[in-house]
Image 1 (cartoon, helix red, strand yellow):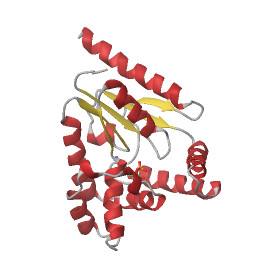
Image 2: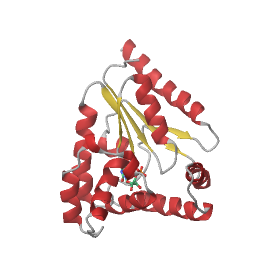
Image 3: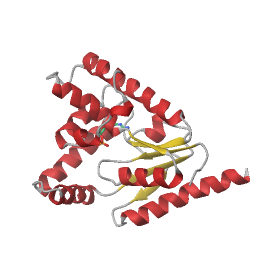
Image 4: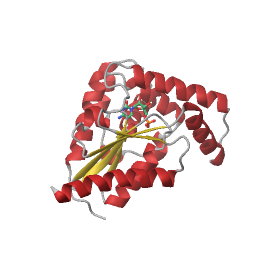
Length: 217
Ligand code: C5P
């Protein structure tokens, strides 16, 4: 279904379900999708691969300016180590500026887009047509991540994953530049006790309401 130019901003902490939701909404409304976490991960991975330190902002900015959104490879970027490194370089203002510029350019292209991340509704696309803030308790998110790892044949301790989730939340929520928080006009969706289908139907209803409002205007 084509919706006309439309931008949907989705924010939330790690393993809240926002990525799956973003993909499904993009598919349903015929929009492009950008997982902005991958842009921070791409910078972190390039630094790790080059053996460069994660606290050299000038180096990280150079890498950020060279990120190509068309070449983000989820498979190589989705490791735990890269995610952890990404949240460390994500505190650097010049890295954020470089990546936010690319993310905004992506959002400007027709037919519009769904972007998911931590600062989409607050910083990247403050004028987004629909903003969603997806959350779930830390134990629920850690449990989801843990099951994903086991289902993929990996091994992990639930307690370690929970500690990681909590550390990442604290870092993302407490940084000075673009901390993770709901935009004042975001719809809040707590998925702690909600399956993905119900979350999708709820989010879709928010978007449809916006489209109906537009068609009347
Ligand atoms: O969502 P994902 O786990 O891939 O994000 C990795 C890290 O990138 C996050 O922990 C966060 O620190 C950072 N990030 C960000 N702003 C975004 C997306 C991700 O700071 N819009």
